[in-house]
Structures are given as structure tokens and as C-alpha cells.
Length: 361
Image (tube, rainbow, N blue to C red):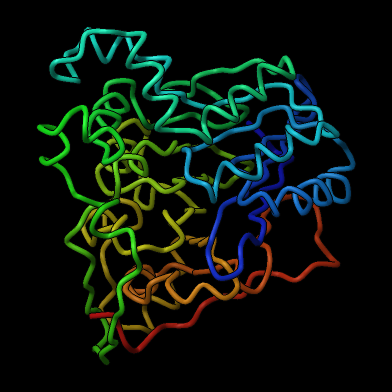
């Protein structure tokens, strides 16, 4: 068991949100291990390097992990490798063109039978992922594929499985022209819902919940979901994964109890397309009858990565639903979140969120 650890959610973004999470573990057999999960935007890279130097007193990252290829997760990682002053011992990331043959053999793309063509097309459709891979190879950084069942430091990857990953690639809006049948069977996320909608808010009584009927994108559902026990704390990290992905991930947790974790990364900066009441029941437990009971329970610590001036995240619907189940909720708008054995005396800490009396409609 890992006894000596630090888990740090960095403050990322301003008007838009991003993710950057550090995990430092130490044990008597393997010594210290430092993992960076996502890197936020390109401008986040300098903050990551400053943090690494100040709090971990090193310029080495043992495991650099990309949960998925969205710019608010990948851009800072590209910048760190590009600048070259941080040693990265291993990169964990999934590159869809590595599985072009599997996609062809599995008939994921109708009327396409050229692995070479599909590989090149996927590289064109995911340019940031291609940049990351090229930089890693240029700098002789080993690359590993973090499918479900892999272990990255103390964390087990729960999702995606290879099959789920391939299905999401084939269902993506990005590959729609090559695979109309699968694409139109899924949510038209990127074409219809990419722009933030305008919401009105309405006062609602305790216990009222309303999540979006629309699912998140296939790219988000391909986010890594990871689980570890750090000291006495069980930690569930979700990236931007949606209801389907997290539901599948929970099935892989052995000796599962409710709540399944002590620290829970709320997916996708608190978007209401990534959770449901039923899923939260499976993660945390059912709603409490009163606010007083919920506040006394403190069932789980929920952490939301959200930009300081991001007016769209986290959604009040999500904060309310977490609150209904007794969660202590923090976001990174005001500062960083830390849990672990080290002290963080001279930084601005994340602030616990209060219960919203209204909800987006």
C-alpha cells in the first residue's frame, strides 16, 4: 500500500477550463514516482514546471499521462516536451492510427479497406495527437498504451477498453465522412452542442436534479478513468469521461463499496452531460432527505477542475446533485487542491462550494 503520497489538482485556465493533476508517491521498494495527468493549455506548461520544481524539487516526470486529445488537456504536455528542460521517462497516450488495422479488420469503417490510407487520415483528423507523438519519438520518450487493465504508477486504468476505444473512434464526428452509419447513431456533439448554450436558472427545492439528455462526445468517452488507493484514500479520476464510460469503469473496481472513492474527480469540469443521478448513486450513494443530513455526512470529496472566470463550469445542476449525496465539493477557480502527506503552506487553496438554490433550465 502507498502510504506517502501527494495528490495535487492545479488551477488551469481562465475563461475556459482545463486539467492538470500531479500524483507523487513513495514506497520503500520503488522509491519516489511522479505522474502528471494532463497538461492543460500551452500556457499551463510554465506553471506545471514551477510546481514540479518548488513542491517536488525535481525536473523529472516518471509518467506523463494524456487522458484524451482535447486541447485543454494535451497542449501543456506538448509544450513541456517541446521546451526540453523536463525529463519525461514515459508517455502514456492512445493514438488512433496505431489501431488502423484493427478498425479495418473489425469493419468499423464501411467501404474502407486500406490500413495505410486510414492511418494517414486519422493523423490528419487528430493533429494535436500527431504533434505529441512526433515530439515523444523525437525525444526518445517511450510510449505506452493505457487501455483498461494497465497500471500507471499507483493507478489502475479502468477505461477505455480497446473495444470501447475503437467504437468511439468510429462513432466520432471527426470520422463522420468516412462512417456516416455509426456517426448518426450517436450524439451530434461537435456539430450541434459544441457551442455553450445560454441557460436561465430557476429556484428549486432541495433534492431536485436535472442533467442533460445529451451524452458527451465519443472523444470524451475515450478519456482514461483511473483508480488507486493512496494511503487510506481511494481516488477515482475521470478526465472528461461520460456516463457510459464511467459506468463501464465502475464494473472493473474490485471489492467495490458505496461510495466507491474518498476523492472523486468530477468529470469534464462539472458538465451536466457527463453525469446522471443514477451514476452518482452508484459512485456516492443515494440522496439525503435534507440538507442538514447531507452536510453532516461528508460522504466523499469531489474536486472540479474549472477556470477562474469560466461562467459555464461547473454547472449548478452538478454541484446540487453532488451536494444531495453528502459530498464536500471543491473547484480550482480560486486555487489548487491538495491531499496527501506533504504540507502546502504558501499557496492559495481551493474553496469548498456552497449549495446552489437555483438550477439551469
